[in-house]
View 1: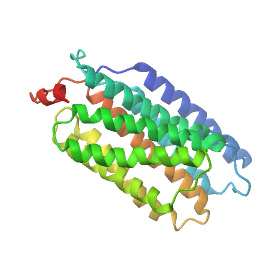
View 2: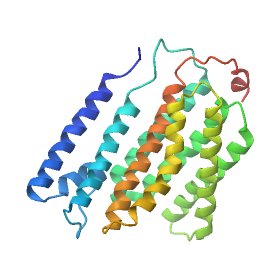
View 3: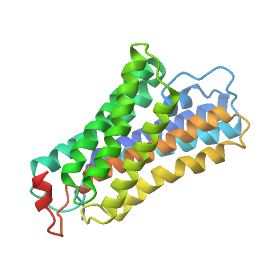
Length: 264
């Protein structure tokens, strides 16, 4: 038994149907425009040929979006909703907002990239701060890495908006800090029965798959299309991990370790 939202299957089905139509149009007319809009949420760039390779890459990106819609909208797992403290409710809301921000980043990235990037990093900064209140281990190290990573990206984004230069090493440090935060969160989730194995597996995949996909994109003739399409797969994995992290917090907890939660 499960407490799921039927709208998840409906929305994913509608998207899948639209994707199918776009694929048929591409096969029949050689026009990748509709398929590109559905998967990249942007106009088809000049010079992108309707090759079988590019078609397969866009189909992979579209299937990733469909699966991501299904996973993010399906809602928490089975049974009556448990009593949740304020900290848990807040972090769940922040996680859902972060998922929405990532989706919005893809939808309007071709128009106002910097604004959406700042929005996403700022939302993740809030997630970092709130997540610490529901963790039972490594709080200080995890908070420090997350604040440096996503807080730093937020500052860099704001400086970029106002036209101030930012050294390249600053983004590298923030990226490594954000990566460390993700690893520490996954370590904490793996030892806490509030989060299921599938959720942790999606988080690990979100770390590992981008590296594998980057290597996989190298042999492609149109490397730019490959990077963009495979980048969608990576982003969807992150979105699924964030959404499932929020879903799982709505399930009853079996180990009595909530005392530290209310003290944060």
